[in-house]
Image: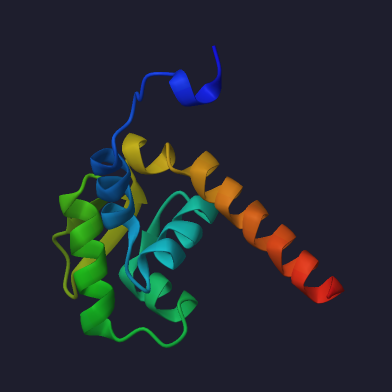
Length: 114
């Protein structure tokens, strides 16, 4: 049985949904920083991601929270302390994003050889 005759187990709809979940200028950077630390405060994320506005960071974090990728915890303090961590679903993205990073590095290496 050749590869062309194999039944499709994933339609483009699932792939489009997966990409929609992590698309956005800042989402992959947010995930990258959360992979490196189990918990980050909002202010730590804002300092770590150069160029992101507070409004955009809040929006991207809300999207990731709505999609079940990150968990937000607010502590009843003054001023309020807000922390973010990856959920199980978010942690499951690590191998896919590592593969994407490896692909990007090899692509850059090949382009530098030309």
